[in-house]
Image 1 (tube, rainbow, N blue to C red):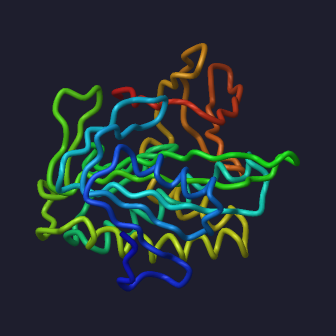
Image 2 (cartoon, rainbow, N blue to C red; image 1 turned 135 degrees about the vertical axis):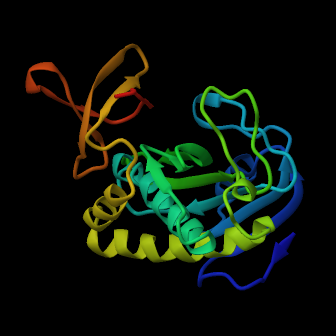
Length: 253
C-alpha cells in the first residue's frame, strides 16, 4: 500500500503489514524502474536478513524499512551510503531518545546503545555496464520494542533504553528526514563531512580490534577512516592496512 504521510520531498512510502523482506520488495521495484526515494516498510518480515545472509529476527513492533536510491557514482563510492545511512539513523535516534543516550556507530553498518546493537543496515545494489550504480537499496532494521536473545553480540531495543513508547513509523519518519539531509550533503560536498560526523560517534576509535575478513582475521588499532570510508588499521610495527569490508570485534583493554 502506498501512503502519503509526511515524508521528505521525493520520498514515497510503500507500507506493508508483512513481507518476506523489505529489501527483496525494494529490489523488485528497482528492477521495474521505480524512482529513487521509494521506501518499503513492513510490520514484520518472514525472511529478514542481515549482512552475509545472516537471519534478521523480524517480529512485529520493530522497524523494517528499505530505501531505494539511484546515486550517480561508481559502485565503490556508493558503498559510502552505509555510513551515510548509519549516521542519519543514529542522529534520528538521538533526537528521539533521552538526553543522556549513549549512542555510538560501529563500522561499517551498526548502531549501538550502551555498547549493544540496536540497529543494523544492509546495502545491496547493482551496477550498470560502465561500473556506475544502477540502484542501491539501503535496508534498515531497528529494535524498537524487542530484541533477539542468544545473538553473538549484545543486543538491545529502544524500549529498554529510556525511550518513550514508539511505534515503528515514529522512528522511520525522522530517520528519512535525517537521511535526506545527509544525502544532500554527501552529494554536494562529498564524503568528508559524513566522515567527520561519523567519527564523532564512532565506537572503538583508537582501541584494539579484531577484524574478520573473507579469508582471514587480522587485529590491530583502529586509527581512522579513509577518505573513502574504509577502516584504517594500525598493526605491529606501525604498518597501516586499509580494510574495505569486514566484521569488527572489540578487544578488552
